[in-house]
Image (tube, rainbow, N blue to C red):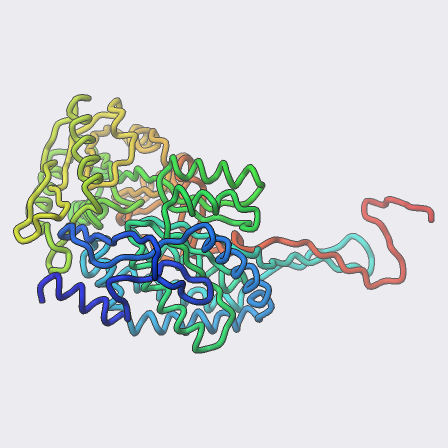
Length: 514
């Protein structure tokens, strides 16, 4: 099939058309007479479909319906809430290939990455099902006789999830599936660059909710961040906002939410680095760095953007890395052997080229790539040749995150210097060290080592598993999503004291003579 046929078949298989509602508040809002946005594919720059957007009246209705639904949803026992998420996971399994293909069409991911994103949603659903029976509190010893103290967690209410284009489905599930089993309902504001995937995922979830006759835990509002996102951040009825995106926007959302004393989960920029020791296994290091830098065309928050290589192996390592870059296939991500697909849009291409020019002005040496590319058959696509740039720590451009496949290469003499270079940037998401030396690995993962929220040894900065809490430090925002105890973000902690005696003894030996 050609690309147009793939578009039509993918939409048909998911029960979608050329015009789709982007507003869900228990029912899908009518598309008639509404403003809409187009879903462009970065593969060829052409429109896949249109999605109607939420207006002011729609937003008000979504929040009101979400509040009403929460009052019923929170009363359903957590294990039964988990049963719904389990069934949604099963429905995602049935539609994995079609949804994965839609991710590739809209976000430009390769086939394996597109389907991998849906598999991640399935995995998070499985995690949430188990979690629904493990929302543990604590029992605390009381100093007062015939008193019992417990710590428990109760649902927050309406939570909002604002997602980015690069993971248009899975990041929502990290938040939404966990929040749902905790007893919250979720309003989703997806990126306008990847709203079609959001509509498709919501359709899958909605079918299951309606079939099992549950209250709606999930709501959708497609629209621009400057309108819907801004309203969400300022809305007192939303106690928690989870935002994935740029640092400047994240700071603004945090400011708005903090002014009303709400809670935020921020997953912002990543300027991730891998340290390659002279004691590394070269094959593992080259593959790990290449995957981290090239996966999703460098458009992951965990993409490897800097590699810090020991001076003894610098030449050998860079030669092998350049050889990998020469050999990987770039182009149509729907072809199974493609490794690097397109950037999301032409603005991303401009940012890529501008960063390379800035690096050159600062003294960086272009070792490979760095040009815009034209792929046969896809003249409207947004393709570039990934760049490798020899850099020094003094170059200011290396402190910035450019959402594109640019890899800065540094030399180092000892591990102390490598860690200093590594930690010198404002962001603190993901990090790696490649070494077979136990002492080096332990040093890098110690309090004196990486200052990131995610630290890896002999594996890439990209590709985090859902069982661990995902998030970073410094300007990355400090948020945590998905596994471990990240579920506590979506609940209120309560300390409960129960007196079952015949008097009211006070703590700290305080006496009240009445």
